[in-house]
Length: 456
Image 1 (tube, rainbow, N blue to C red):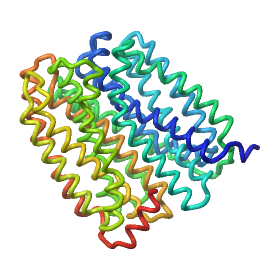
Image 2: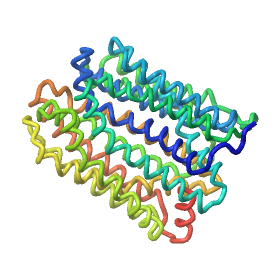
Image 3: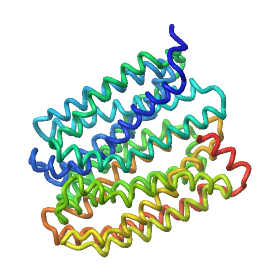
Image 4: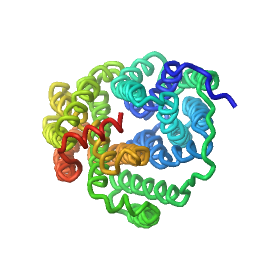
């Protein structure tokens, strides 16, 4: 069995490349949605499922991906994730219809969920020194942050060069290169066959989340009809069954639950806003996909620039202060949806872009630090896995909720009115996040510094 294959720096580069590709696909598709809608005759609900099929699969499988890596070895699971992701990407590019595309996106999400936890575990394994590991995970975090601004830009250019299918086809050669790199460089360390995979909890979580998203999307199109009520009943039963299998220590930990609730609401607001902004700028504003990607930069760049600033704030003051600052600023930005116009004016939505970007930039680091700090460094893997699951769940719910409230951009006046309603919905969501932030993190300097070092 090979244990020392490549230098740690090369292993880090390969893991970052695979992780960047997976996170890029969360946002790269947004600017391709109008092209997908026209080519595959998809309505508003169909375009929502193109995004949510991917996010739901990641949310449902992320914890299981980490558990499978612990049991069978992370190198094997990373290779399996890359293979699934690559094949599904090709299927997306060749999809003859909307149903095939949504199904392929869900399979993509399964591959991503297998890859993401393993990439961090492999990096931790090849950097046994704590200081070196912290620097390596800092690089990993920086590369992951770049995926958000890169997604709309790369997606816009690809759509203009070759069409929406190229957004998915480009993944294939990158995946092949990553597989070659993993096989040549990443050490093959054995897993622990005694680790358990909670299949029942997985099934309940995936069923419940899918039912919730279906209910929200369907309600936005047809109102509170029989399928919506049935889906909500299924969701409650499935999520209750999944929740019974969670460790009692998690359910009774108020700071941990509060931090993860903020994480869910953060991604709900951020990715829901990104979804409707992409439609607003292209369908109402008449901007090209590439130009739309550039116009979205005021939202995504602050997320990258403020992450280290937020980290220093957490180290000095604890997670509560930056979380409160971020949620309050994002609430102001969401309220600015009242300025949106049927003509798709860009100046009117700049306050939304900038304030929501700053808010998310201040929030990302402290919500993870608060979650890890609530459980302690010895359970940082579990805390990080739950936190990432909640964030992906928020992404899926954000697209469903914001899309349902805004309505179809085919009717510009109605869509603008829907964005005005989003101002109220968004502010209320961020007010809830503010309340959770008050319960999520402490302010003692030394313990928080220890928590942040565990996150890094």
